[in-house]
Image 1 (cartoon, one colour):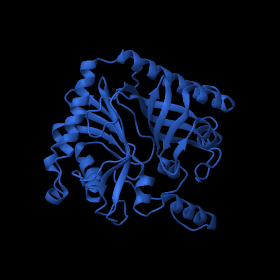
Image 2 (cartoon, helix red, strand yellow):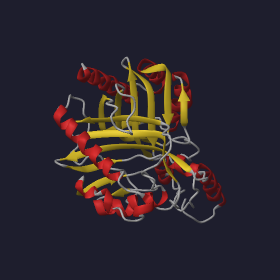
Image 3 (cartoon, one colour):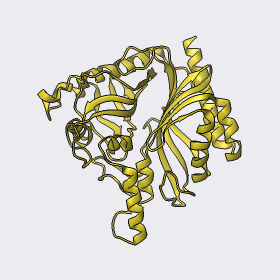
Image 4 (cartoon, rainbow, N blue to C red):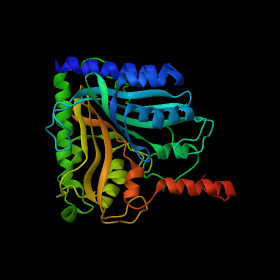
Length: 360
């Protein structure tokens, strides 16, 4: 029954996405009402944040998005689902039904969106999404859009250049096998999830006061292929080996937010810690995770208790994790540190209008 329910949920979301791709803007509201509960709890990355109710979702998000990108298409490269087990610290409520995916929204940037000036050019919006299903419809949604990458495609840079690879499109699975429309082998699913859980337990062995810049106690080489591919958002970038991952992301992140043994009451939402075949995924939303005890992305430390919006999709190859897609809400992270990246954008737009030299 669990597998049948998961398959029905995946079919419902896949059908929803295909209809959104083909019905045209005038028919989009009816498609959304048919797939989404009237009281949906929809949560998007900053500056969009929370939207309650399907009518507000249509008027406040979808119609402005489709006016900005009238030929918009959803192009996922990972798509999966599952029933929440609830065993992990990061997991959500046991029995929750999830459908999830990551990839791109692609369309011509015809009108301004979120204050970003339209370019008239094809634009790619990297996204990651978790749907919580109820009775075959979408009851809650958590979605991240790499808004900073849209800014960059429009010629604006509001954070320092990413330490890792940046620019262009973040690639999907090398094997092009991430769209899991059919039922997956439960033994393979369990093996993938167990490897991800072991990797996460390794991460938790790091103690800021004891280890500092020494990351060896986490023993991540036991879990990751040495030629792993890790893809983070604008501001972090992509990494093409375990060494690059440690140098370009993990060391910087631990310097800024290294409290793996955080002793506070957890808050926020854990979602979709599930495995299907060689893939697994998980996410947190507004989840307390560390004090900001070090500078990050050129922003000085604040000492504040931070929350995070972070998603992961992992691909296992044999006994190792080989690929990882990690949208993080960098705009929300920076505003907690007292820096408004949307205001930085507005300032750069004014500078561009004045003809001032710079990167825009």
